[in-house]
Image (cartoon, rainbow, N blue to C red):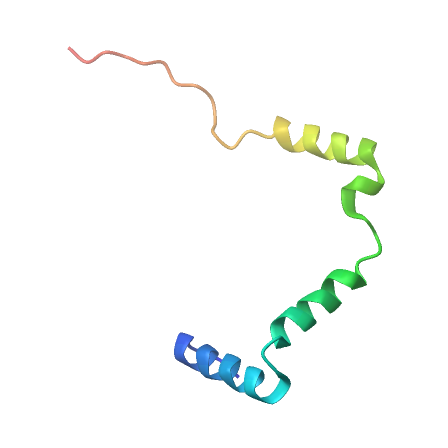
Length: 70
């Protein structure tokens, strides 16, 4: 198991040696093919409403007056 960047590099090298150069491409393809929901594209109105709600929530706070210091 990779706990550091060096460990991750070693694990990646081992995976490629054991399972072939295209190991990560194959497992990525499997993950992509598993999706069946279609995400927000399946329900455009739901996506529109979710975007509206997210846009209404401000993270900036109230506007402050710019007071010139004399």
